[in-house]
Length: 263
Image (cartoon, rainbow, N blue to C red; front, side):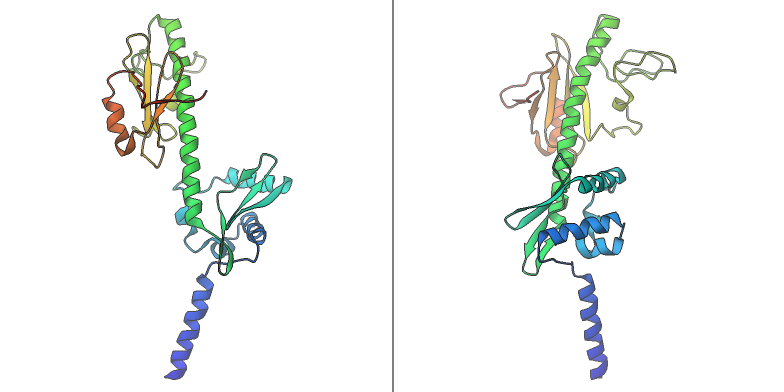
């Protein structure tokens, strides 16, 4: 009985040790090991470094293979492990791109923290989406100007009615001139949005205007944006009910609660 109990305890200890995240005496050792595991596509090593459930912290679409290739190329050009207190990040390439997976100092040494990595990945995704939304609003202004040059009036809808050219986008046949807006504003899946944002034309008696808001607040974006023919973007955090507030806007009228976005 004692032998079985002892064997069971040993098995448990070995299993627990196998599941424990690997730690290192220096952060540079940790980041070097991570790059090695990534370059070798070593799933077991990645699980030892990042934890058994490390994939749960990644975006639903997973890791972009091109981003992995870019990381490895930049690492060969230049790499450095930058330490700030009890947190360290790998920085690669001439531009100093920072891998969003920090190593943190714990009692056992330096270990990767996937929860902090998930927060950083989300923050960066939101930032990219917001920049894309701002760029899309500027594209909308250019499109309205092009539409006006063709029709002597501004478009009242983004996507044209079927078989018509009464909006800023319409499908074209090979050889035809493109519509003022591209097909990105007409996603194949209804409500899918563009880079995590949805758009709506706002009434404006002096010209044209548009509002943009996140598809899922705090996940695909935080700020909402408005623009008119002056091509100046204003932003405001409309909170968890951003969609309702964006739909409630009856006209373009950014008050002092909206902040101007630097061009």
